[in-house]
Length: 352
Image (tube, rainbow, N blue to C red; front, side):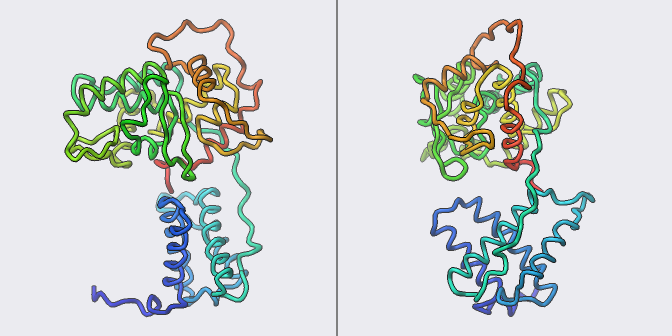
């Protein structure tokens, strides 16, 4: 490679320069780095599509061109032969719309060609895979708790199952985000940069505390980063490594279902619903801002949420209570919308 800079990247009104300006503006406005990366990815692909058609400046883009790009996304096939999901298509188009809206506001273009660009109709899919109580227990028992990393992994699995937090939220947990007295976890800067407090069951809490006392001191490397779960090298666990580890335990368990960290999020929500928890309590635990069936979002006190969690989560207690004779019917509650919203989160380990 010659290392020469592409001529279009030197153009201050070219795609590359203006995309870079847009992404910097997102950071200034305190968008999460994950959002910036995602939008940057989609815009780079859009810029490459435009370059193939000798379109190098946003000022050259019209609404018909954007509609052609949208059709191209619909007809594109991945190396596996499958199409891009409508969710991913919508994310790509949303990034393009935000880009041109920014350019119009900054007077870098005269009109916004993406102003009336429609998004694909949202899919209302239910989670494809959910573990039963027995299957979840089989997965939890896979780590070898006789060694350091096995005990750590058991604590991680118990935390995912008990709280339903996202994998990115788990790797960012700090030691002092755990409150053993109240039985809660403080999730800092979750999706949308929103903090929340969620209950953690007695059993998960016991495993995490065992990890903190017996394992973490042997893994930590000074200066201590303060992260709760550490890698074998004393650093924070990489998100990809966490996903690989959890997926391997799911496979080893022999339950015959695919998935990793997000599988436990689906499972937690489904099992608590089946146990009788109201949708608004599950909504609070998941950190969802709203649901289609919820007209007014009701924030609940953590002590009430903790009580609901203890009463409805099958793994909340050190000793499981005997099953009730008659479980509430899942179909009798408006839970399909909740589970569809959960499935639409775009599980991190299921990226396109």
